[in-house]
Length: 284
Image (cartoon, rainbow, N blue to C red; front, top):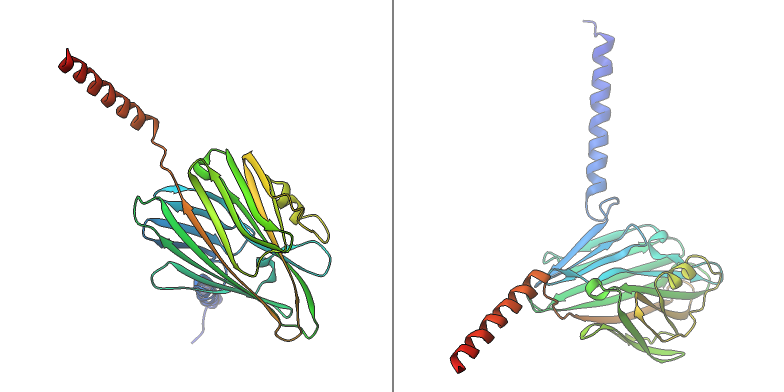
């Protein structure tokens, strides 16, 4: 029995297509590659983390209103320009069944960086939420490494670009940051260890420095605003060969003051006006 060449070709195409679909399915599974945008959710709050780019955590929504543009981590070993941690490669991650915890690990022959986020919402319409962060950096090489590790944060509270930021402490001991727009505020407490250097700046300044300056040391400017502000922290550590590590624990609390929509303000004003008129009639 002879087989027509077109039949052979068709079967080869089917086989190739099947192999491609299997590979695509593997890549889309958690922890394997291109499906790297993760959403955390808990009790009226959500946060989105792009594990595949320097966008990092790029939204944090509380009671329907996003307050975050970007928060992510950079590193350098020795001199040179800092690199975002996602460039380390070797990404694996897990998200708990409750969807409020993410554990992501990047690793190569030199470094392993593990980042654990835990989101705790304050409840629907509470205006409050909390984000716990645990970070572990391990030297996987056979030589000591001089590590500089950076956190960059860009919150835009209420979307108004009218924020103030203050970083507390002094060189070698920065352990608290507060950014606010009126009574709406994001606060970060650094449990251990304190950051060595810090920088508060207008939008784009620090991000440009991270991506272009050799051996960057943050400038110790500790206040900025009002405006569209950012802030960054820098840890310095010598990691011993074959397993030396830096462990960071931090906690962010976000509390927002609701700003009524213009239509809501108008309705409230009309109601107040009607109430005032009724009172005046009653008194007269």
